[in-house]
Length: 329
Image 1 (cartoon, one colour):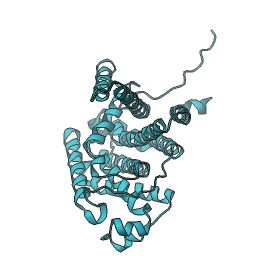
Image 2 (cartoon, one colour):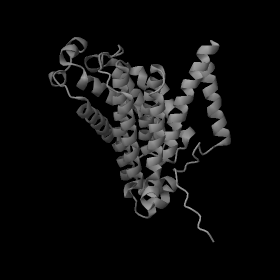
Image 3 (cartoon, rainbow, N blue to C red):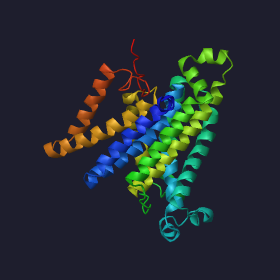
Image 4 (cartoon, one colour):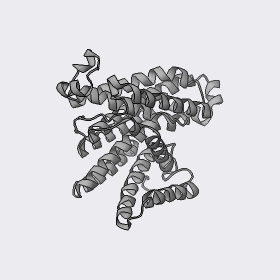
C-alpha cells in the first residue's frame, strides 16, 4: 500500500491517459487523430513543466526545442533518396544519415537537449520577466533560422516526406515515459533544490543552493522532453513548416500548464488533456453551428472561468493522492 501511495501520482496519470486512449480506439479516425495530438501535447506541456513548473520561471521559448526535435527527425528519418530531392544542398554527413524510429527519437531529443545546454549558459542566470523575454528572443531566433536555412530546413517551404509512425500507442507510451521522467526528476534532490529556489530564491541561495546550476539541469531535461515531443509531432503530421513551432503553440502550451496548475505534474497532464479534448469538442460544435470563431470563443471563455474561479489551476497545484483509510476509533 505504501508503494502504491508513493507511485500513485504517476500511476493515476498514466491510467487516465490509458483510459482516454482506449476510449479513442473505439471512435472515429478523426477523434483518434485528435487524441494522438492530445498525447503529444501532454509530452510538450510536461517538458515545459519540468523547467517552468519547478523553477517558477515562465519560459516563452521552450517550443524552440520542439522545432529542433522535429527538424532533426525529418533529417534522420526521411529516406536518403527522397532527401536528395527535398534537400539537395544538405551536408553529406546529414544527407546520408538514416535511423530507425526509436534511435531517431532519442537522437532528436539529445540534439534538442544539446541546444538547451548551449542556450542555458546565459539564460538561467536571469530571473523573472528578464528570463521570459530572453527565451522569447530565443524562440524568434530559432524560428528565423528555420525559416531561412534552406539547405537544412527547406526554409519557409513545407518539410514533407516524414514517415508517419506516431500511432496512438506510440504517443501514449511516450507520454507515460515523459511523466515518469518528470516525476523522477521532481522527487530527486536536484528537483527538490530547484523547487526550494522557486518558493524563495534568496533563502535557497543563503543555504548554499546553486540556483543557476539547478535551473540549467532542469532546462536541459526540459529541452530533451520537448525535443521528443517535436519528434512525435513530426511523425504524426508527416509535413510541417516553421510556423508550427512559433507563437500559437507557445501560448497554447503555456495556457495548458497554467490552466492545469503550474506547480504540479498532475496540473501539466490534466491541463494538456482537458484543453485538447475541449478544443476537439468545441471544434465539432463550430462545424455543426457553421459559426467561424465559435470554438476559439468557447475555449477562451473556459480559460477565463478557470483563471477566475480556480486561480491555482484545475488541480490546485497539487499532485494526485490516495487518501489513507480512516481507522475505526
